[in-house]
Image (cartoon, rainbow, N blue to C red; front, side, top):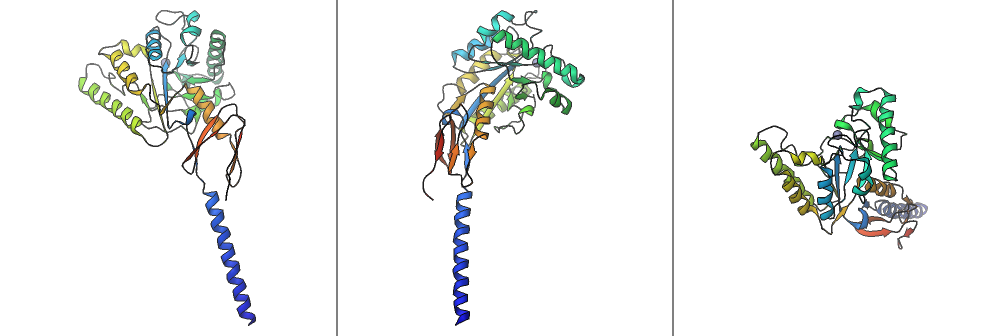
Amino acid sequence: MKNIISLIAFLFAVTFLAAQANNAIATSSIKIEMLFPEGKSKALILSFDDGTVSDRRLVKLMNDYGLKGTFHLNSNKLGTKGYLTKEEIKSLFKDHEVSVHSANHPALTALSKIDIIYEVVEDRKELERLTGDLVRGMAYPFGNNNDLVIDAIKGLGIEYARTVKDSYNFMIPEDFLRWDPSIHQFGKAYFIANDSINDKKEMAGFYKLVADFLKSNSLALLDVWGHSWENDGVGNRWGEMENFFKLVSKRSDINYTTQIALVDYINAFKNLKISIDKKVISNLSSMDVYLKLDDKPYKILAGAQLSIKGN
Ligand SMILES: [Zn+2]
């Protein structure tokens, strides 16, 4: 009899623990996924380097299509032949992002640490003076970077730095100081002179990636980089640029963003305070954050706290 009682007690305990364990597994497996601003599943970054006079035509085209851009400028080149003037920076890039590309466009990997710091700080300081705004982003000149360069720019207020290493995907980079873009404008078309077969192949690859982005069902970031001056080369590149803008503009599922605005948003998402059971989520940032909890969309207002009811 004693044995039976203890067996029952044992079975009860096992059942109880199993139930508890199931409950624990159920709550801790709540899946939290980020959505882009305004609850969108896609985001588009357009990032152009060097600040040449062709940026004027590009910015006009982007404004016509309601697109946002990030423009990486070399402050010591501004006002010299072929480059934008310092006076026009603020008005031209209104509603776009102005970002560091170093003061003089050297390969930073060839410089000493102090010279890297000089190139970045000088550029940042001058671009902030010209825009009257904070400048917190960067693109490496020629895409060149290594551990020394990245170590040097830490602490200079640079919150992301874009490379030129195309990822051919739509993922958000893990390390914002090694930010690989999705693809160069038109892929590597026109990289080889007078090679129309290569141009065609690369152009097709570019539009295939754009099409994959547009029909993607999961969270997708398309990050296209290049230079406005490339469009002045052979072929109908300005026409192609407009064709690309037509494809990606005015879509309700895309968040059109500068790179720094997206970085700020991702940081706000990463800084959410989440209870162990994931039923209380606090947004201490100054931005509304959008996310999916087990595939159900939620919006957590800036400074607000979300409490999910029920077990
Ligand atoms: Zn450049």
